[in-house]
Image (cartoon, rainbow, N blue to C red; front, side, top):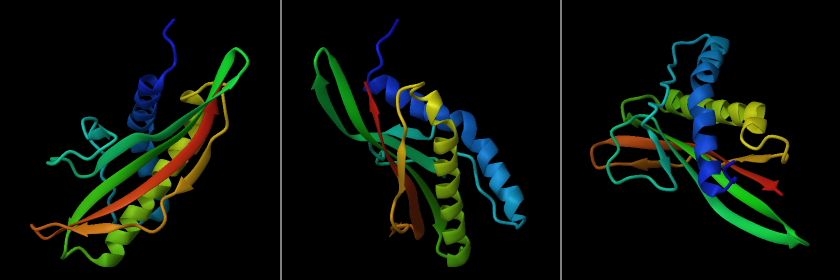
Length: 160
């Protein structure tokens, strides 16, 4: 049996989102009942810990581990993890600000709900998770006139 390590953890988080985000985005779009679309990230649009210099996906997702703090209690070691997931979506300046803001808020909600509803699939029986949504929705303007908006979550949990 393979040991659970940080590599396994990242793979589990990415798999969780790949398997569940499409259904959640459809659910939210249906609930809202408007014409705003939420594109599902391509299965190849998930990156670990950093954004590549050139990304040919919209939207795309970055998943990573911010920190791991091991603590020893006798012969067992508990690890406190702080992880993140960020979804980046670009639009052109002519997309209305209201639609762009609504879209990124819906992505944040979808990722938060997928994580909270399915966290036990990442670490069965090990821990509870504390989820914090990134404050505000930062945006960057590119030289080509695109605006990249970011939504994301930070989440903490322990594994013994």
